Image (cartoon, rainbow, N blue to C red; front, top):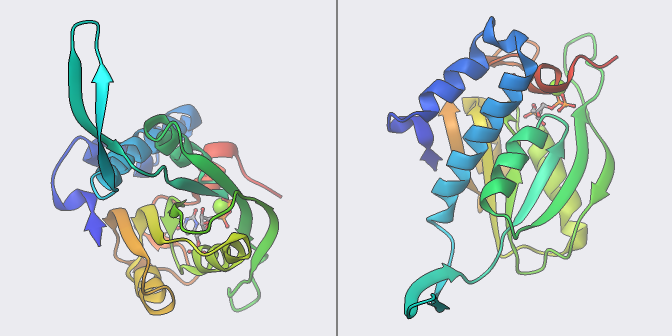
Length: 214
Ligand SMILES: O=P(O)(O)OC[C@H]1O[C@H](OP(=O)(O)OP(=O)(O)O)[C@H](O)[C@@H]1O
Ligand SMILES: O=c1cc[nH]c(=O)[nH]1
Ligand SMILES: [Mg+2]
């Protein structure tokens, strides 16, 4: 498991601004900070991908380097993931993309909920490296249900899950139910509250980026 804030970097500022209740009034800044965090995490993930040697013709001579031997598939879970996904796409500009509509349905009286799924647009996933992008890992149910839906499109060779903020409960849930998935996290928070929101967290990422839904 990789946790970005285990090393201090400028990304601490992006996460601090995402959390800050005053700065959250500026939804464009919220989306931009989520995008910037996506770029940083994409760069960190890029260090773990496979590379092959390549030769580039400059105007003067040949330059030797290593380039990705396989492009990842970027999987976005609507809607909060959209700006985070854009950060990944800025870095992995040749990646294929998948989109999943998964969201927490209406909470019951005891605050439990089911995950609703209503949209899936996806390339062939057989033998691909998939990066599942969701800014909030709370209970982990959205990510697990999304992964199960993806399997109808093939069996990935490798699954990377990336979140900006994760709760210990969601991490434990994924480690139990998706033991082969690799986690790349911005930061790990304290706990979930009785509505299954991350504390201290940042609130509702989808609402902060795009406004409240009915
Ligand atoms: O780990 P979980 O308990 O499943 O919760 C996390 C999910 O909640 C948020 O989506 P939300 O349902 O709020 O939908 P939205 O993006 O449309 O706001 C978030 O983007 C995750 O997908
Ligand atoms: O804290 C949380 C949990 C789920 N979804 C969010 O947007 N925030
Ligand atoms: Mg939401």
